[in-house]
Image (cartoon, rainbow, N blue to C red):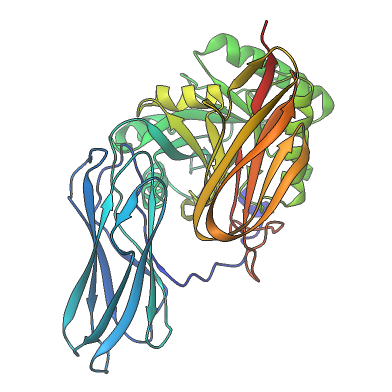
Length: 458
């Protein structure tokens, strides 16, 4: 998608300090970037300890907030709260209060975090005495073992119509706390040699290509050579891709963008899924809504395809605004591809979710013989308050609950039969600048699961 077709929306006003700590396979990169301004001239920095490539599950990580009173006021005071999106947890109190930091002196606040599994994002919300607030991005850490990884499946560089280099995109991915990135320049994968030099052990890189014809686009992942597929139609494309590569992935890209709308004949091809949330738009902006509807329609027909969320970024700074979270058995490109093949993925721009029926996770098949009542378990958490959770069966909402808290854990009994599928969606609170139906990268918080498919136990 070309960046000159869209405009960036309002920038989010955040009243917190943000330290991103993203899980499995992420090396510690000491860095602190202050975002925004504080008229108080207080100086803040964040450090994570231990400073090593990986931590074990159960290991304790110290999050240190260093504060220096560089104001013109003596005895400056404030409060700070540590918040986590993910499976890691704060040990002890999450809120600290510091009073009377003398002029010219400094202090440290230290939290201990138990690293459990998968990727976690840590936020430090600060309220100063004068009610000023701002944002700081800090280091990333790693938790060894299997778990949920965060990645962007649709990115562009200077090898097509993107503004960033491979190195700039990867730096932005690390800053955003991503664990994997797919490079998908239009009709080429020329950036692959650069990617191999720049990726390091902390970032999985998938070689991809955005099929770009005059009529529609498709995100292709896990190719092994350089090729321009634009002369093929979608059916020829899918046949060629599936015959030529080992475990490739093909997703319909922004299929309801006006200039590149997928036509009925295009949907006959053997795609793995649909980019149902293209980050250029809010999750519920019409082109994305149409993509969600088509996804449900095809799965009602028995297709068993999966949904992804991406940024489709053309500037490095947008990487990680919207992403796909994948459950990896191992930290490798093979692990990323396997998770996508199985549908063990969900889309989000912040909320952390889980969706199961017993031990059956999102993307899997539940085998039954006849009609049956099953217990669906939906859970989620976010550092800001969530507003709604919905359960969807065969494209129709069958359960909805308004929320006004940071997390939920709901069990719901549902009558199902072979041929049905179930999935969930979660919404955060909208504001003046954050909407679900906006034309902007800064969508209000949202997440969606992939379906659990009900199949006949033959």
